[in-house]
Length: 107
Image 1 (spheres, rainbow, N blue to C red):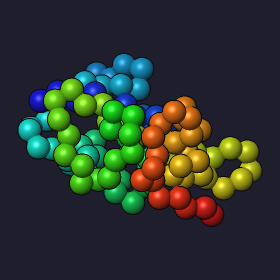
Image 2 (image 1 turned 45 degrees about the vertical axis):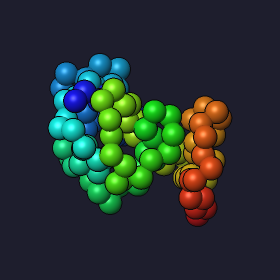
Image 3 (image 1 turned 120 degrees about the horizontal axis):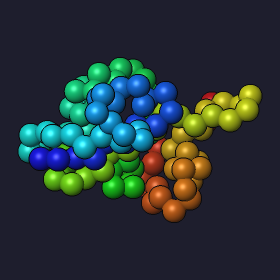
Image 4 (image 1 turned 60 degrees about the vertical axis):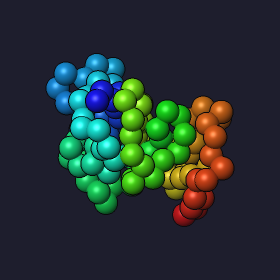
């Protein structure tokens, strides 16, 4: 099945060589999880990241479907402050992203 994978900021270096504009269309077997896609891309498991599937927060165990868009962002930081996570990060990425289930962590 085909998925659209979007990696932003410092994560873009993990995209395959055929990627364009921080986006790659990739082929995966049916039933692939977000975690398996991250492993295929060789994104370090310990690296903090914000995961969205079709614009909604997702967990690592989320099973993906044909045509899904997986977007992966590093934690957002600005200026000298601490990175922001969860709801604040989702809002900073567009404000309209539903984030009812996001865990809020502040440094």
